[in-house]
Length: 345
Image 1 (cartoon, rainbow, N blue to C red):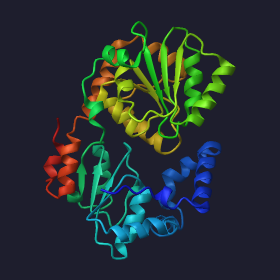
Image 2: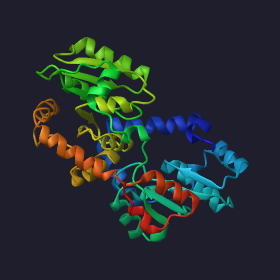
Image 3: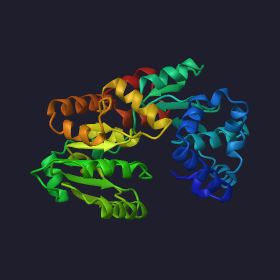
Image 4: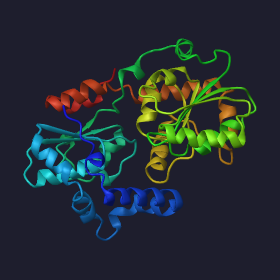
């Protein structure tokens, strides 16, 4: 198996500029990004951009695929899927399997040369079939998470391993791979009136430094706050928490659901995270603040509602109860029938 990171292979100035533009629009013009995310297929020229222009800057990635000539290409990001699809249209004979890493359906992720889709939720399968994809090319596999998250680890045992206090609530705060939105979540934590232990997965040393500067200005309030830079295997922290506060991401929620730890989702990024939150709320697997309720009040309220926490955790665990590993391996081997997409643990 060979891992190729297209952004690392071809991360030149033009790619860096596009990434900076995306970040700027997302941060400073959220309404613009929200419109683009929901309406891109109605904009002139976007289909050509998606299928052709978007991938032309990735020459090193294309050369790597030609050199390797793999039997199977497994992609976990739409950009990688676009590159591999374009290469297949030009003669590459690899089997292309695209994995969806979010909870909602977005047509932008779909490309003509994909041989098989592995999707996380039933509505994604329905969406693909609705745009004309053969049902035999769509497998409801669930979202793949490491076995450490599916293990049954008592919270007390996990806390002892991590030297976390056993006598107060533990709240885990995550902001995805880039740590976006952690500032707003941390500001809510420091205003809590009760003593809790808060572990913040900052994703990087740079992000942790920013949060340390924020805490220097605001103080930690009643909370014992622990800022961690990059944790390569945070499963034990997921097991140790009474509540996880995040922004409705894809894989981080799947990990929480597999652990059986309840999730309070707030401050989603416009576009994909808002769509994720709508889908997860529809399933009843995440907690959200009430209308007009700020995040501090919501956290404080849910820590006093063990029944609500337990119900959300049980629904989340059910959502990821599909036997993802077996199904994915069968699909890659070319032996999975459609009925196997419904197999549960």
